[in-house]
View 1: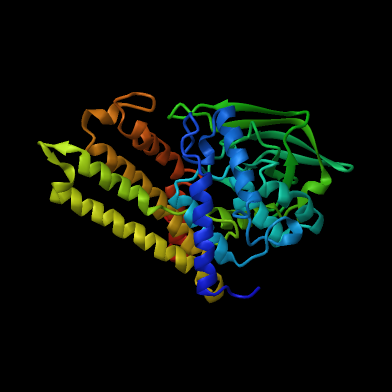
View 2 (view 1 turned 120 degrees about the vertical axis):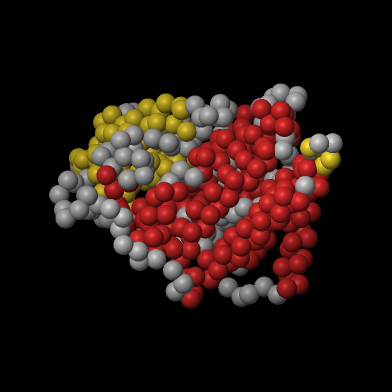
Length: 403
């Protein structure tokens, strides 16, 4: 794959910008979720599924994935440009995040040829939706203690147990499932196995969980003698922990995702700046307050530092620069920054900060209030901030384990 010239990239960006300017629907007549974890209604789900299919079919999604599996086989820089342009137009989110962000890259990395050909194109087009079955009710962030059982029975595995905090679990066609196939071995991790598990089969039940925001993006999934094909095993029995860690490398950003990835947009802090210009305190714009201006500048600096660290992360596999350590630091800093920034946005809204989505008195139709409430789940999902700090301290910085 040859490197594109600056002119080729510039021409592509213009083409991409024109397409999103013409095709982006910002207001479909109902509230759109901030992330795939807040998809609550059939309207939202159908709209976002159609949107992802449209972007993919136009050639602006899955761009660097191999053509033999449904991608477009072009240089990754084209996808980075398309993702940046998409965000600049405030386009709707891509729905199938578990598939496109984690499962697809995992299959490209270590998957069987038949699985790549079977699953990847429907992932990109959102024809088949995926969810993640890692966390369990009794174990929180301690994935290694998973107790959901997978027992081999001929050409099938019989699954019994429960998974929780599963985004899109009630709508997914497939789940990446971490289950215990053995209680033997030198550690709790040794008996875990990793499966590509169908969801729309007998023995699988889902229950929607209401969030603080009133949305229903999470589910609890129950498996009662659910039978899945033995061909869904990824790797060998007992290798589930290794496979799950590879998946988390994509979730946390240690490996470059050929579709796209998470990052904090400058427009978020600029939205706060715009609000500070119009909001009044003591009859004067909030932005005239030097303390508020200083805090906004601090947030801008932090966001720029995150973006630069993200560029460093993309180069890490080439420089042996601790890619997982950088990803963990980015995840911790990013999620905590979003929480701080959205909380700050409420501080100068006065009494209007108390109004929520749907109330005519809410600022920006309650966007910042909803973002603030949702920001707490970001500091928990993918490993809590406390867990991230422990891992960074012990495994990245080499500090002694706390007592």
